Length: 281
Image 1 (tube, one colour):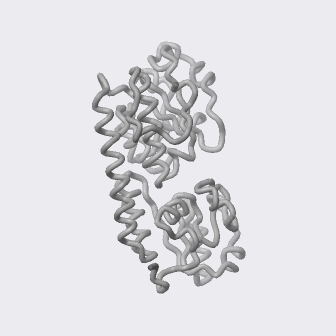
Image 2 (image 1 turned 135 degrees about the horizontal axis):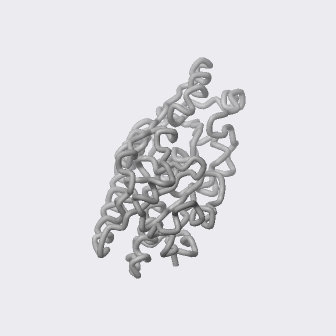
């Protein structure tokens, strides 16, 4: 039984904490969510109180939350405003697999569900290890360029590059993965071409990937991934949120795409829940 002395009216300003709370069996405690919330479907019925860097402060205040969950320095101004109004705010800043798992455990502790959170985090750890084991079947680890944005060209953030490695690939910009800001992960198109990725995975938050634009970049006609037609999209909702979706569906989609470039299937228990990019079939 959930201890009523823990927070019972929670506002989530990003989707990953909403999804985690539902997985912990505490979705009924959520009274407000981000406007970008998509999972689980029932969460979309909750009052929407924020975008990513903007929030309806008065609406949040009117919900009388006993906990507001925010994410990163990008929501620092929102958090500060809420704190000045006397609301309790906890801001996570997870950017790696280890930090995502820590977020799950910490959130469980905050709401009195530490045991459930430990079990949930352990299940994700087991799932990641199963993907790693499956990837050992690959004849080699393909060079992978993860494209987080197109103009300017930005390579993947830390948890994404780590998931590429778990899925069986070798990121071509390992030296940039710990750069937390997108501006610090800008790369030149010529440098990408010189590193000759065998697979390109793109995920442009808020807009559909245009593979023809990627393939048509000057000098990229000789890139192995372009010549072989191995340009794939993973939707941002599955990979660019540092939470359960990335550790589950996101890494499974990456692994399935990589496996199919070698003509391999993935074990049924590791198959993605959603349909893959059609070019990955």
